[in-house]
Amino acid sequence: MIDYIFFVLLLYGFSYLYYINISHGLGRKAELLQLRRFLPCAILAVLTPALTNQSLTSPAFLVSLLIGVLWILTYPSLYYFTFHKNSSDFGFHLDVVFGLYFIGWSFSIKFLINYFNLFPTVSLTMLSLFEFAIIAILLLQWLYYTVYKACINDNAIMLLRGTDFNEAIEFYRSLPLYIQISSPCAAFFLCSAIIVNNHSRLTISVLPVSTLYIIAVAVIFMTFYLWNSKKGVFIRTGIIELFLDVQNYLKETASYHVHLQKRLACLKVEQQNGYAPIQGTVILVIGESESRDYMSAFCDYEYNTTPWLKQNKETRNFILFPKAYACADQTVPVLEMALTEANQYNYKKFFESCSIIDIAKKAGYKTYWFSNQGHIGSAETAITLIANTADKALWTKQNLNNFQYDETLLKYLQEVDPSQNNFIVLHLIGNHFNFINRYPQEFAAFSEPGKYDLVPNYIDSIAYTDHVLQQITEYAQKNLKLQSLLYFSDHGTLPDKRRSPNFGGFATVRIPMFAWFSDEYIEKNTSAYQTLANHQNYYFTNDLTYDLMCSIFNIKSNHFDETNSLASPKYKFTREMLTTDLGKMYIKDDTTK
Figure (spheres, rainbow, N blue to C red):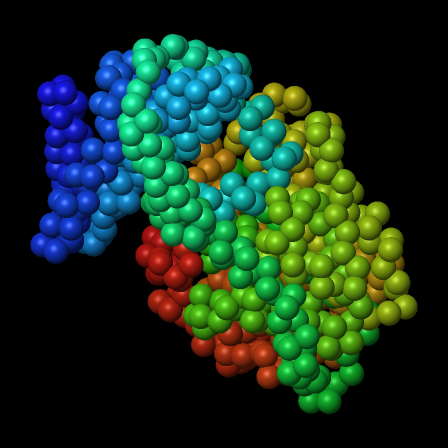
């Protein structure tokens, strides 16, 4: 019995001292509260082995112990490593509580299965798979920290939620072959080891009914306390609470449709100065991961990666914006603001904001959304919710090992009626990793066809995007009476660096943006065109695209702030005022002008 008492005190002392040293900003009251709370937790962790005289070195107990201790250590430690220098108030006592209770709960279940012979082969295998899932949550956090040198955060979880199956397969296949082979093998062997350990026979002797009663009551209590869906300890631990916060955000975002009719009912749109709606087609093209730092039309890049755009940049029909920035370096948060009146500066909520599709409909346009991006992982993302409000929304078919190049979208334009006034959104896959899959290999000019080489592949994908934009513009001019086309990229990327869910620096938000206008548009909407031309060297963040499009439509609305529009004389923003990384970083701090 002394061994068990010593082990209880060891667990208790370790847990409390660890919690005190890994937390910041704890008051005396919080310290005393956990001093009392952790003791019964440690007792329950060792209760069943002590009552049943099981060895503390039993393989089955060691598996439970390992998982519990790892849970205590993982998220609090990684959070501390990441934030202890700039955060003065945090603590994760429930991770400690969960870890201690899990030890007792897991081993008690194993003991009862063995004692009562409750289909041990099936039961212990199922429990082992559950324990493997818990370990996987822990190992993924350590892997993430090893790669990105930061604790996993909401951006990372959003990125994972927004990754579709094809993207995941592409990423996996881009890894070195030894990792592709070793990762599933390591997972298989770890899972097998847990199963084998848990099937090791425990020393079973007949126990008094009172002892079994105590164990049963303890298991029932721990089961409810750990796994209760409303106030259970598990859902209040650091990593799970973070995941649920993202889940709640997505659920809130999904209410976009609930508010749709309310938004439209109060939305008022009329043409500036009594002008009729633009007769013809207006197109918004959204790029993906394209950086202007690699585009010869925007900078003195050593290769001519954008021959069409560079050739035409001086003509009056084109206006290039060399000082455009993304408001973030991830697709979903960028586009939920770029396509709606919500932005970094007005703090409006996405699900209550009017979209550019809403505005276009009210202004008398037939609206279309054609995407080569798939559904961005799940149907409730902001992008898909906005897209589905268009009169017609179509996505290219995303089949494994069958890459849909952006030129595929040209055939979708054939579905647009040229006799109507149309607003079309085209969402490109553009320059998304894996770059070598974004262009036909016969199009390779800067890389060896079929050879995986990050930067050459990336600039080849940029050259192909330039070609696609040329095809879209020329087709729409010839067939759809194109009046205006605006192109911007959602964000940039560093092609020779591993993409991170954390902000990757200004190089990941320096984006290309340009506008094309027909001669007819320029003549009929001289003010908007000339103002935009005068502002082409102004600083701009793409969360203000909604307001810019309102000016291009030449409308006024109770849901349009002209001071946010680059095409308005009232545009209020300067380099010193604009931000990125969702308001956390100032553009003025980018030393690359």
